[in-house]
Length: 483
Image 1 (cartoon, rainbow, N blue to C red):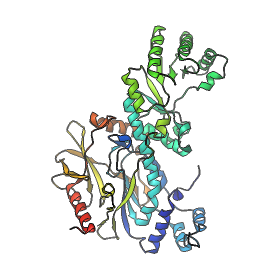
Image 2 (cartoon, helix red, strand yellow):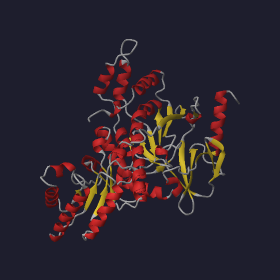
Image 3 (cartoon, one colour):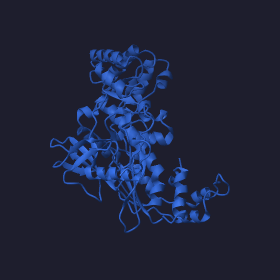
Image 4 (cartoon, rainbow, N blue to C red):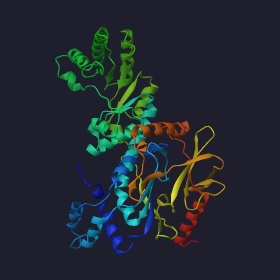
């Protein structure tokens, strides 16, 4: 889909941009943060993804003459044109000059801590909001789902949800995010080409149906793909399909070839897999793998493993590529500080009528602390301009009685440069999906098992640095008039 990334936005971002321009706020600096409020899938963590596409989005960000011509013809509901000609002239010359810091893709992240920080002219920051959220929300959701599926499987998982994905763009991003989250491969050939992902796939039921018999179909496929032969055995009857696969497997062995596996895509997968394994082993085909598919997710895979289904790998499509049980991550992008050039940052906070929507002021970053054994101990959200108190205490923003001292522990900061002065500075190794997959795997290994379980996971401690917590509380009290 050919489109202008600059117009991949909500209209109100551009109407606000005109408002900032007309109000003389073009030079005013702002700081925004992108974060989410709850872990997806009722889980204990999320996996950050989408920063590579964010870098593509902001690279050479500008409005073309065609973009401005489109905006010029938009009508205002009250009559006349929506945008002024002078503002559109400004947009034609506009070039992004913001700075962006973000967590690296594949980083395990948690609610209420910034994944992305955007700083620069307030107009620049505003124009990036919608597309940034679109990049990071969806891909973080899919990468998290993939991580849950792969943890449940403890075996290779192939993603093949393109045909059920939310359009071509959604399918591409879903395939990439699924690999970042841990999938061994994708069926999406274009995603493989564009993102350097491993691709996999064999044949469909239609291949079998196009021949006069299943055995004939299997033999033909084995001749065509002797080095990629996984036979789909449930087109007519799984028991007979396994027998036909055994026949072809033995014939391949006589030719010095190897039947790689069989796939079962319907029925009682655990029972059928056990029966198939017994027959394959009895025929001497002990190294032939069994692949299970059919609307799988982490819960069905967990059940299959509890039943000791002898699966060597899994194919997961619809429920992964569409994040079937949760449609969105719900990430938000909030203003936290402003200043005029050369002046001090001024805190900005949204209080709202719901405590869950209370924001955190300041220019923020995240410190991740570790126990001596390498497990994560807690995350501290702190203001980079105020520093961290000697006590290194974090306070749960939702419950001031929950506090934790992290002093003396090793830590790292999570936000890293992605854009400086409008120029992408993210190194290629931090844009690679397979590198991000390794980071995800290593990050998940630092979590306690209780934080990775699917049912009622233990919550990971994320809190505000004590001084920041107190400053936020004082600001709320002042704005509410309850000092």
